[in-house]
Length: 291
Image (cartoon, rainbow, N blue to C red; front, side, top):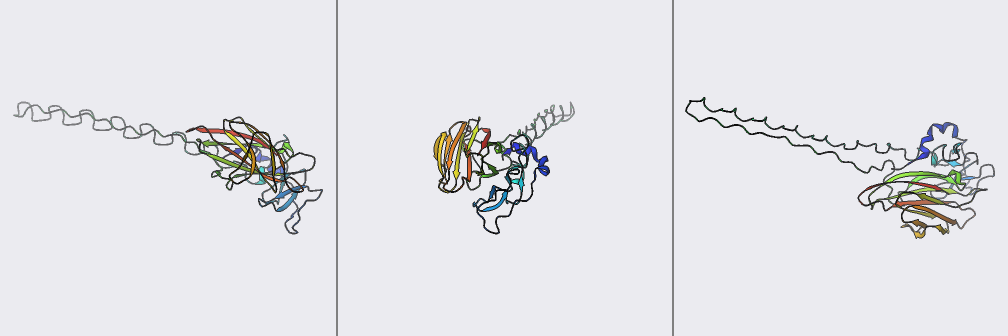
């Protein structure tokens, strides 16, 4: 139900598509060559392909490589090479606000019997006919229909309320220019949104995961890699329900996290959690992030 700014650049997809990445799956290679140093890994951390530095964004299956846009952000192919993040219906793309029956959608006002809809005045026997003057009919008013209500429609990615169902934002490197942003909504204080991306450690850049938001929501960032050691330069140390270490800020702001993985490179899956929106309210948010 989120949408990313990267979705605006899908028209550049043909220009941004690089040659197919080297297939590293057949020989069970664990590293990439110097000419294609970007590692493309599956959610199980298996190396499935390699990309050159000119096209550092891996497709989810590791078979294609994409370049980043000329603006220096994620302006090229969408993260993960699939459909643009947030590629569902446009925000609010359900029924229009107030999509119930129109106001007054019952019988029209006055839809009962017309005023005086009983027998006409003097509807008894004619004057002098023995009977007294007849009674007048009553007036009636039709009902008023219900007005349609509005709802908090978080388009595109639900359900993503757990780490296991986190929205996949694709792959970025530890070069900060490959970072981007994601937007969504929380339907009240009990709603939770989990998002994830695969961060790769490449030469010449530095692993320093950061996420920030100006919305009044709790924002957390958790790391998943072998022997993950996390420090919180900004934010409070926390642990996810799945046991992953990370940092949180309680009401907007920046999470700045140091990360060291027990391996040759600091490749990791990073989880973002956004929750604790306003009670009984639809809370919109946007999160900027890089690896």
